[in-house]
Image 1: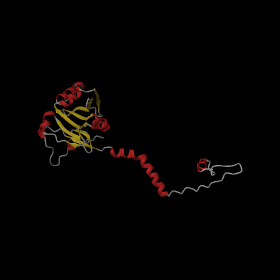
Image 2 (image 1 turned 90 degrees about the vertical axis):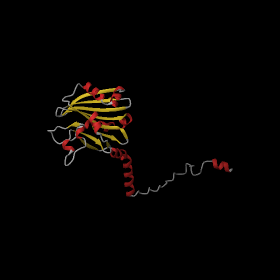
Image 3 (image 1 turned 45 degrees about the vertical axis):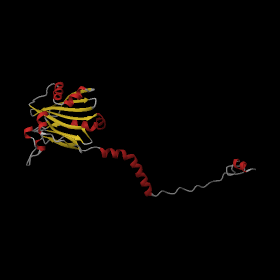
Length: 241
């Protein structure tokens, strides 16, 4: 038999005859895994399952309450002594931790009524702000209010003119105060606006973001929008809860 033939012939280890009985092969038992190693393996598996939820929880933003005083331009400069903005607040809204407050100038306060503004430092055009105008005892019809707000806000005019849709709804809070809510889906940005009258003033709260940021932060931005409310001077201490 040549070497090639011997390589191609069945291995004697794999052949069997009728006179041969299968040989029992004893397989040694697997080494027991130490308890500490099992615990580590289970913990690692648990981390793989829970990691996304843990990361999501860690990324959930925290919020703080802003107390707005709607002070006139003549009273610009804040409060001194022991005065408290919370005690003097006319409105409140929530702000994500990490957002920065933009200092509103006296001229800006006097011309378009901007009282407060916060922005996302990662994208300054993602922002939340409030304007107010004195001399309003009640809201005009829901369609007229938005048009009047746009008269003093060029950015809002452009957004409305290029909007894919503008939605409006009327609602009342627990004390019966009327609010108008607007949602503007513009070509480049998305805005949520809430308007109400109190203390002979019209308050307009804006939450706006470019469309990419809106897609990413919609839940947070809607929360900011819903957190706005005016403060009843005869009511309890202001809170957004």
